[in-house]
Image (tube, rainbow, N blue to C red; front, top):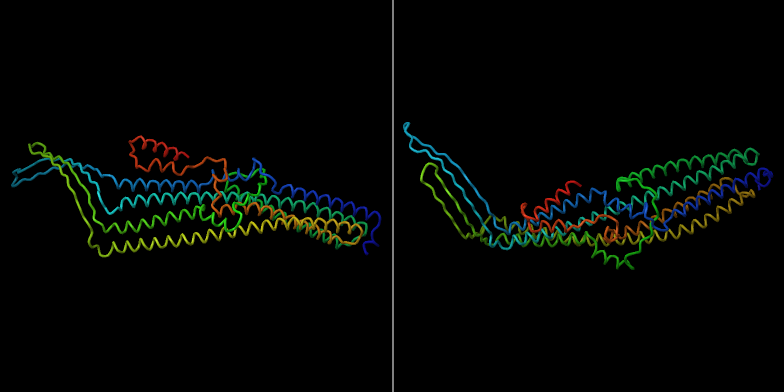
Amino acid sequence: MRFQTMCSSVGKTAWQSALKRLGRRALVGAALALLALPVAEARAGSLSETMAQAYVHSGLLDKNRALLRAADEDVAVALSALRPIVGWSSSVGYAYSDSAGVTLSENVTGALGLAAELTLYDGGARGLQLDVARETVLATREGLVSVEQQVLLSAVDAFFEVRRANEFMRLRQNNMRVIGEALRAARDRFEVGEVTRTDVSIAEARLAAARAQLAAAEGDKARALESYLAVTGRKPTGLTAPKALKTPAKTLDAAKALAMVTHPDMKRVQHQVSASELGVQIAQSAKSMRLKITSGLSVNETFGSSTSGHSASLGLEASQTLYQGGRLSALERQARAQRDAQRAELHSAGLQIAQNVGNAWAQLAVARASSRAGAEQVRAAEIAFRGVREEATLGARTTLDVLDAEQELLDARASLVSARIDEVRAGYFLRATMGLLTAERLDLDVPRYDPAAYYELVKTAPLKSSKQGRQLDRVLKTLGKQ
């Protein structure tokens, strides 16, 4: 009623004009915010492109690929133990003796020998060690897949944080414009005596707060850009909104069951359990008899003398450790304890994966509900803002009422933007917890790394001079240049 008695025709016209500008700016801001929400994935600046850049840029993947190649070489080392050991030796000696200045003997001797041995039986230890090496390779491959998921999930996080920061900054910039319009309207009305200095101060305070919020949003964007740069090696340009992923399973129980089969951490621990069980058998084989065949060929020559000779030998050697102070029994007990520890880790890994899937499933459900509720909140806040603005033109509302309604609308839009971003991100996180966030399953446009290619080259422990060995040298030179 105070406003109805104080408003003049000139003042009311200025107030209505300012409020109309205020409403138009707010609606423009709403349109910008809604257009920026997820609609369809484009090629340039897409999430797929971001993940592909992270995949190529990641030094973590290169590191773990090198560790996998090292594990592949363990297979070649274990295989070599099944083959004969051949070696040669040579020596040259000089001997001199005298008595009372009279030379008794002086000669130069030389010897050349060739020896070979082959273990025929050792309780199966060497074959078991080869199996352990192969299980370790398989476990390391699954570890590489797990690292790949980490890299791609980091790219997803960086992508969405940049998008969130961009949208929040746009909302804050629009808020600044809207409050600026409200401040100008308050000043115009103050000039004609319709409002007091208090109304102007309220608008000025809101504008200062909006500037602070915009500065915070700019800081968040700067940090998000740095994270994106660290993950991908590039600055983001024109990031487009991705589609929400289809849920890989219809129910939570189905999702957990699928994760138990597909998650690389589960497969990795399973191979480690197999390797530890083989370790128990290796420890037991240490108590078995060992049988090996040995052979040798040697030539001896005394220079300046007719003395020379050669020899050859072929033998079968059997041995077995009967007592070693309890060492062999201790090693067997240790192997059993390590096996039990790996089995417990397998159980823990299953529980952890199931928990992660459950958390991700709940997070996705919350994000979807928040998105729906956020849309309703924005709709109601827009109606309320328009109503408060119209009531203010009639003098039934104050400047503070209009600013409060505008702030509620801003907060609602910010919540909606965040909820929709979280909904899409949660879909990718759910896939990661199920072991499905890989370059192959996402069909990313990246050079595919074949973890078995290097293994196929080294699994037969090729010699450097062989055809396969020369091919392996070329591969290593190529890797060294990358």
